[in-house]
Length: 150
Image (tube, rainbow, N blue to C red):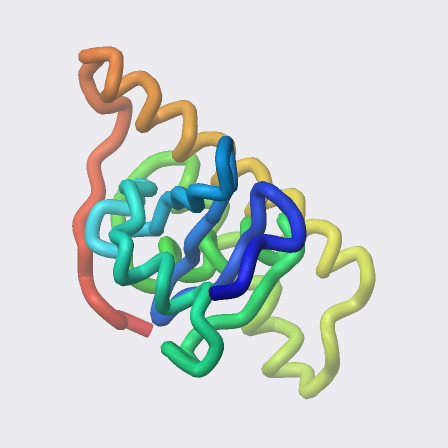
């Protein structure tokens, strides 16, 4: 078995993301994005093994924290639909991508920075929303899973 180079470590995993940590005694634990709910849930031992055992699962790659946030938000924006500020920000990011595609050009550095800012904001907003829900508060927005709607 491989060990984490850093704790936490971040990975693209299957059609979402997974965050792994070694909090104590070399026992790796993790949180995996549930693309149907948008929430992070405890990763199963099988998921952790798939990432840590060489050749066990080729559908993953290690990410920086910034790339992890982007991959998480790309998955959420692909598989979830709803109303409110998060989904408005996803639409803004999509508009930037589509504009560059229509103009047959790469994203400008300002556009990449804007998308990164949007995704950092949506990531933080989801975390705050799920913390409120865990504390028993009512949801501040509603959304549904749509599968791969793009």
